Length: 373
Image 1 (cartoon, rainbow, N blue to C red):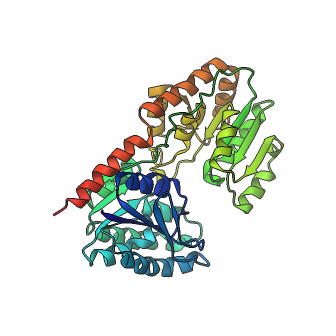
Image 2 (cartoon, rainbow, N blue to C red):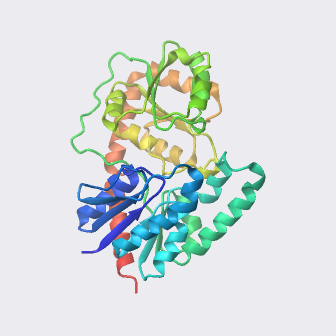
């Protein structure tokens, strides 16, 4: 049996991409899978996957300084055949493990260069230097390992120039085959929903501005919010139209989506998603589609292609309040159209945008890694 270890010191042990999708798919295929994390919750075994905890780091800087060394020690002790690493600070760990003739995969969830440019805790004056050092080192490492995975075309195309054995495994949802259909929309409840990390990149202030022109609408926010940003939103004149529910379980979010009319995914243009290109790595659209929920999203090129192909939502400029409010009123005023969009989205994830298609890609990729000479 081939032994595989996934390693992350940033993500939760329950991370959907790492644990529920990649680790579980590999375990189901017959690999002996371990997951190394750093959350202070101790070792455990979940769904046949051995989880090893190297301890929680007190702050970001201690994690950056010490996580790679501790993860390396635990990884080497496990003596696996393949190591699959997920965080930029683990790049040095890739090379150290490679010296022991191990197969190494790096999973680039984000554009490292662009991500550094977006980090508020890095002083602006040194961001170009930090970005240059990080991307130069990433290039050095990726050229020397066995394979690279990323989540969206523009990142994969760039990384393929460094390592030809690069593929895209994106974050389509695990679609429940027995999911109940949402059903016909009767009387519109005029409920909007956003589920995810509540940060300024998701343009909640723009959404609240738009609600000025959308009478009798409620906006439900589900997710973890940074306190300083939450206070800014609470000071908005339209906060009285918001139901902030905080962090919920996946099943709780699904239940709220089933009672909602429109999902919102108004992500601002930024370097990490290729500007106006967008990313397939974000799960928001596909979660709404899985829930049979029509949505309004940013007019990224990649997202617009999906919307136009399946007629499952509306696209807007993420900074245009009037366009957003018009899109909201359009869907709320046309429940039959909105209902059809929801059904179209559900059919799209069942046919194309589902984890089963990506699982196939992942397993084929592992076969190539195993068979490398």
